[in-house]
Image (cartoon, rainbow, N blue to C red):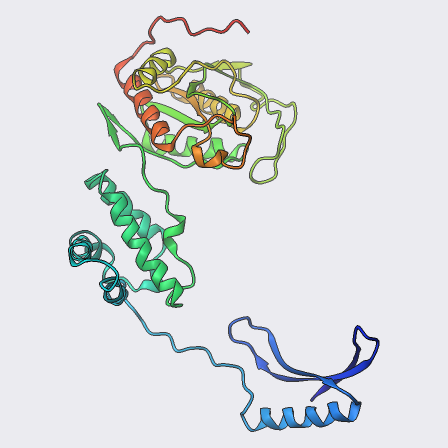
Amino acid sequence: MASIRSYKLDSGKRRWKVSVYVGIDPKTGRKKYVVKGGKLTRQDAIKAGRNLEKAVQNGELTVAPNPVKVARKFKDVYEEWLKSYKLTVRESSWSKTRDCFNLHILPDLGDMYIDKITPQDVQTAVNKWFKQSPVAFKRYFVHINRILTYAELRDYITHNPARRIILPRVQDKIGDLEIVKLEVPTVFYKSIDTVTNAIEKEHPDVVLCIGQAGGRFDITPERVAININDARIPDNEGNQPLSGPIFEDGENAYFSSLPIKAMVAEIRKADIPASVSNSAGTFVCNHLMYGVLYTIAKKYPSMCGGFMHVPFITSQVVNRPTNTPSLSLDTIVKGIEAACKAIAENTEDIVAIEGHTH
């Protein structure tokens, strides 16, 4: 049934409009109406409404049906994309790209239906390629992203799963150390639980936690964590504990059991600024460092653990004051690898002047 209403123009004159229900929009799930306005009289609007209702009954006005989905495999979308790509580059370029897909990408993803590929599928493939070739894996990922972006633009998929991928940076093995990487949430207590669960699963010899300290110029292994939560800002889940202990039965402080001075020396040897820090703050970084060292002290006395802060990466300071310090991501990765090398080579810390006067 048509709905008729009057409305006022900016000039003060009154006009009439009519709206007629058409159906449910399959894309939004909401009711869809056709509206006609600008009628001088109510009778004109009624007449227009009758014409619209007749059009709906005759099927002249309908909600577009859901498009029929075609099951497309990754390799099919790749072949479709390659045809258009060939028109934009030289043969030498597209032939190298084709060989890259045939040798490295299609064996892992080719037979998967593109709308079923998950971020975890892409992450698994990327991690595998990183182990095979720490240099070339980025190129493989760029190619995957091209295909998934192409599919998204053509509505073959609703979201590009490659956007949620964390590209590996630090190598999986440094010297005699086998590196197990873990992403930790910036959330009080959940951060500790994440690391302690990984400790129980992996039984590592060393635990090195890494956080970001925006405003610092250099990479800074931390000397000590104190037993206090005093959050200046909320964490990523809105928690903001103030002036309370992290663990009631914990020590007032726990010191890093990593060779922090040797780590600083090795990072500097790589031409990267570094220094020992005597404060991990009172936010999630100090909280996590304390929680890990508390767990080690209670359950794993032969294990070593500690924390290291890194500065902003360059892209994070674009809209900050011009003197905000930063390091490139590649430089930070190089510094982390140097710190790991020092951990592997030094069972005891070196003697060096790394104190502060204030």
